[in-house]
Length: 124
Ligand SMILES: Cc1cc2nc3c(=O)[nH]c(=O)nc-3n(C[C@H](O)[C@H](O)[C@H](O)COP(=O)(O)O)c2cc1C
Image (tube, rainbow, N blue to C red; front, side, top):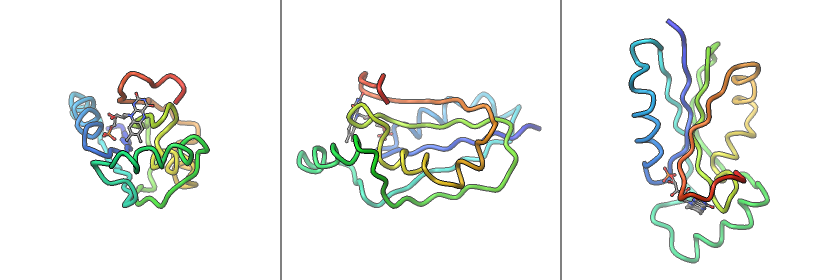
């Protein structure tokens, strides 16, 4: 059986639900490992002030502290789930993209991107 990695960040659980349903039909064909990226820095719901305070850090692609578990495995394909924040990749997901562990895991692998948004996403 082929191995599939599904890695995502989800602040409210919305993307988690979408991506779980998205891969559900493939469970018969693949061994699927899920990696949830977690961060203690962005709680839901955000206040108006918190929401706009993350704007500069997001656009400048600054990273935050994240936790995730990634197996050292030779995956056949990787699905990455992310969301735009201010037309850029969200800070937790962007931090994941910068991690050496992920870079090593996705090197030369087919990657599928799954994104959920409020319809302003193209830039990210
Ligand atoms: C700080 C912040 C900025 C956002 N900026 C955008 C945006 O620029 N475009 C957009 O379509 N949605 C934007 N959104 C909405 C999220 O992308 C959307 O709610 C997404 O479904 C979040 O998924 P999640 O709750 O699973 O993390 C933003 C949300 C947050 C919290």
